[in-house]
Length: 161
Picture 1 (cartoon, rainbow, N blue to C red):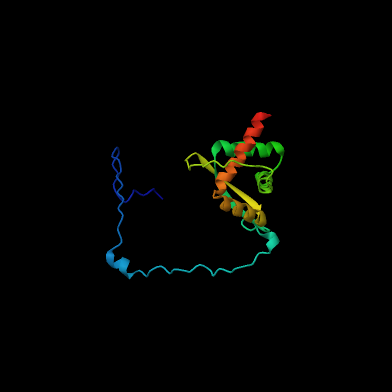
Picture 2 (tube, rainbow, N blue to C red):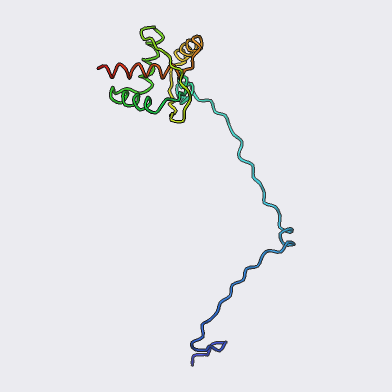
């Protein structure tokens, strides 16, 4: 059986042109299509978590609070906590307990908000947090100002050594 010639005549040396055309769906066809079915999300179930398993806010009776510290202060405190082998929360807890007991006095600077600050999140036992918050409010200060004052005192004592 001899090979058959192609259905169209092919000329040597002439490139074959290919044209692609895309058709837009007609307006009538778009109207005829049914709208997509929207499926609602599944109903949310609230599951109570036992107190001892809670994380974050109110984790086992603790309260999370945030202070915005100058970058130099935050780096100093992080380095100090790492050098002592404790956590930031433990370090601040000790500082705040000493401040509440009156063994440490702090001159609270009025810290103006600036752009070069970083947020620091800490968890304190709720009773301690409430005592600190009450004393700070009674003195007419902000928690951030007191925290910065405590850190500056710590920085000054580190410089003296």
